[in-house]
Image (cartoon, rainbow, N blue to C red; front, side):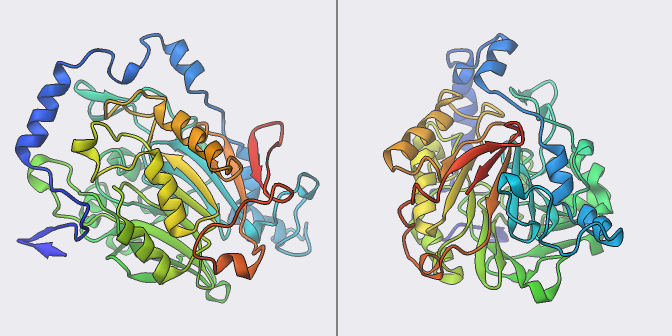
Length: 397
């Protein structure tokens, strides 16, 4: 919805933030006890609190489309679903989704053989190297170390979700899917018009780089947030979430940045169905609540989003990277895992380690479960999480 030339949120839970509120909160932060968010001053202590791993580069390479095509061309395998890693229980590439968290809402995900980067952010700071905020946990690797990115999903234009230095590094070597208006930022960093698609809420298109017979699509879906890179350009571009579908069924949900609204997420489920395999949802930067409730979800709301979508797995992100709010920097992770235990869904809900590759199976377990309006109770005989590949990856059975 556009009012006065700017995008607005239609959700009853949303409260617009005024300029005066923004200025007040920035001044208030100057007088808060330091360090903000309880972040230790000792870097080694931060590393112990926020462990990071090098991604499983070999597994990521083996899952990528280019590697699979190379193996086919050399007649090293007989069909696309056969791999030499079956002894570890890895699903075939056609049914495999990997997700490696880089920090904030930036993740390297693989599905349909595509290498997908979400909300690119690898830098050491936001806004300015002098003013910060500075990153408290470095990315587990650099972009150049990952397999070539085929597709980039950008939820909105805030600097911690759209880093222009990374845009320039990827450039025209990937296809970009962004909400309406964000393309101008891509063009300023050298991306040509034919290399990006702007979508509006509820708009759907075939997933770039996939065969139409495989039934892959991507939908631009609503989020409750705002946009802008400077004070004067607030809400001149759209913000969104994304649903990736296969044969009409939701496989992957990237929430981007959002506050909680029941009509929002229940509406996404009504349009695209229940049973999303993996939902990546923000769970940090949420206090003080009076200020941030309509912009950022806390861990309780992230779990509620999982329930609203009737999603199978939840990956909690947007925490432990920058200090943007008042809660303790480890609270989002610890609270999310506490809630998972209380819900008896510790096998389904995770706040991941930086760089550790998570592996999910996209194959249908049962059509009945996909049609359910609420997530099914986990079957401990089937739903398990176990380390594989010398602990560098976690397999969600």
